[in-house]
Amino acid sequence: MPTPDRTLDQAEADLDRMIATILEDGIDDAQLERIRTQILAASIYDRDSLQGRAREFGAAVTAGLTVQDVLDWPDILAAVTEEDVLAAAARVFDLNNSVTGFLTKPAAVVALVPEGAPVSSDGDAAQPTMPEEPGSPEAAPAPETPTEPAAPEVSQ
Image 1: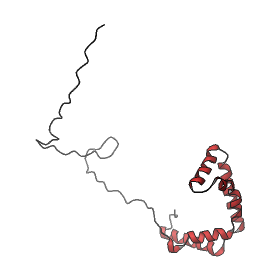
Image 2: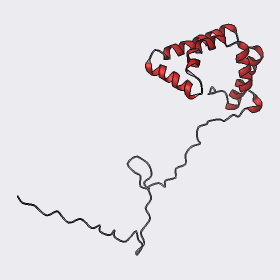
Image 3: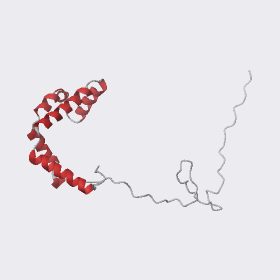
Image 4: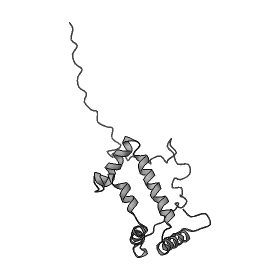
């Protein structure tokens, strides 16, 4: 979300510049270690509950990983290098394959309900009703549905 003094186009250009800077200058070793520590800590906290542990294994298995992959995760994470991160970032952030969509607030809603029209109890416009024409099926009274005869009384 851009700040009030920036447009969406300016914010997108800023983001593209930051990505280009990271791809050109690389990642600071201290930053990479801090990110590794945060990811590992989040994984450890998830393991503090049975639900978190089950979610971790379930998400991994449904994504095509194995139980052993989950168990090896701390070692896999520790083995990630700056070069690995930059190579993945270069593939993911290829501007030739990027698409940008902006979510914006809708324009002011124009009142579609004429002034003085009936409104339902929840504040929405009441459903319009069509006048019934004489002889139309809607104007005819509903046929009575037969009722079952009452069961005879049984005396003892």
